[in-house]
Image 1 (cartoon, rainbow, N blue to C red):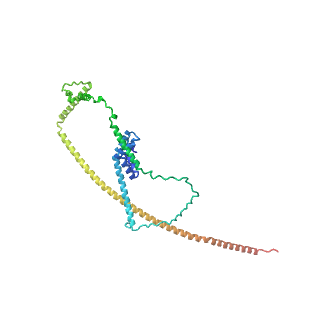
Image 2 (cartoon, one colour):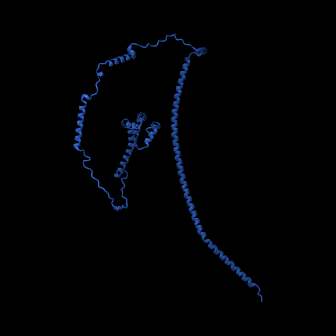
Image 3 (cartoon, one colour):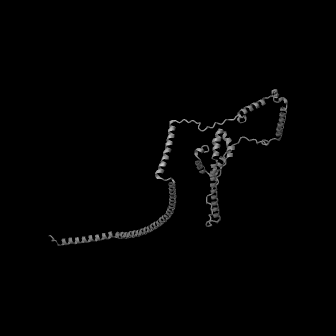
Length: 384
């Protein structure tokens, strides 16, 4: 994000930062966009991997460019973190007050441990066979981490002796640098060099040398010769004719209308005053229309409210009537079902009675037919 911060845009970068954890982003932004941190700590490490120009222009330069905007984001994150902390403190205080009986109904929950089965300790069986080590390490000598005093004194003594020998060696003239006789001879090189440089500087110093640049000559009026072409001549002639025509129109208008421009200026002043009055009246009219519109809006809002109340009352009445009608229908259906049950119970005995009546009718019919047959057989003449 830092390498492509300019392409990404600070708004998208801010959205990414705000979507992360606030405390971590606050610490990260403070560290990354701090000028001392960038130049003292990060710049040397970056130069080990990137070119110095790339580090200065792309990394450090762009980070310092967006530093003021990042400070604003840091303040936003700090504000959000402080708000969350205060909210947590308030919730903790409320829970503490409830626990102490200072809030709510004064009742608090008493925790009770769960009736869980205690696990039994699992016994680890001992190893069947012991793995032999095979050797015994020698302990570390006690003098390993202790510097001997005798060796330190001997080292310091040798250093001092080496310094004394080095100083005695270089104090001997035989080992000093060579001294050339040409350097000890008198020379005018520096003097000639200074004179030559002074002469060159004097050639380039125009103010002290007395040579002044002459100013350009001022042109005199009437001396300039301007050669006009055909286009310039026609353009000047057209301008001249246009001015003549305008002056002629003014004179003709004055001769025909026989008045000057005073009347026109007075008329213009009256019209301007009239326009101002119309604008003031229009503003007042708009103000009154606004007040009337506001009153109409209030009345419309009140009317809509009353209509909603009336509709709600009508709906409630309709619902209550529907509920009463439903109860009546249910009662009528219950009575019809009870009557149907009684009818079914009454109809259940009718088949037996009908069968019995049919049996009696059949028995009577059979008896009558038998008697009729006997009667017929009894009245017939007997043969033999």
